[in-house]
Length: 234
Image 1 (tube, one colour):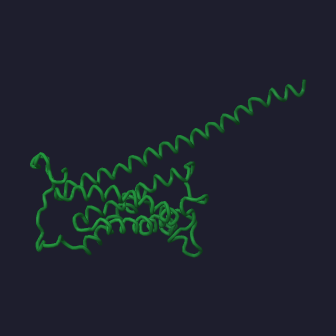
Image 2: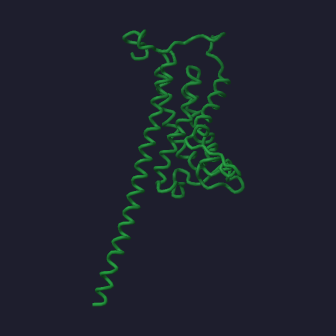
Image 3: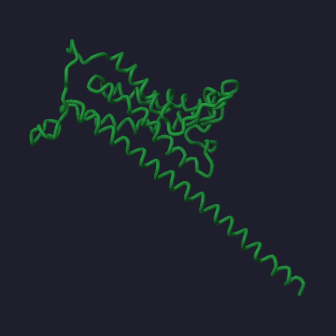
């Protein structure tokens, strides 16, 4: 009888514990789903950049600029998966952890994560921003960069340049360790400024289009004036 009474009193406690575990699991699942959805929306910025840049270049260059915006995400995601993610969020090297990270290469078992997010979810969210930083440059160097050269640049910025900058703040580096920490909530500095500085350097190195001795207008393919079958669509 005593044993039965103890069991009866303990049953609600067990039920409450099970309910709390289920709630926590549900919260973690919802967190991951929400962040993955947000990552997809950020990745759609690639389409926006492609449309903007194709509208500001000559009709013959539209296919090239579209291909660059697609392939910089593909190559950038691979480079960030292999190297960049570990540099940005991995455990720091002795003495220089505030400047460059290491650990979790190839999104391994020791890959960094955040809160209730799985390493894969956090990686997908971060790779969306890495690709955004890379694709910002394509517009500044449009019609003046070979396709293969642009892919080499993409690998460099997503594997090394952008991850190091991210390490300084989002990865817990020296900017976040200042007495008055630097904050960048949405990436206006870490993402867009990094891409902008790289774009400026690229435009400066390349210079104007070959044959242009003075600034000239290069109207894009306007739907109002384009022929029914423009050259880039054939």
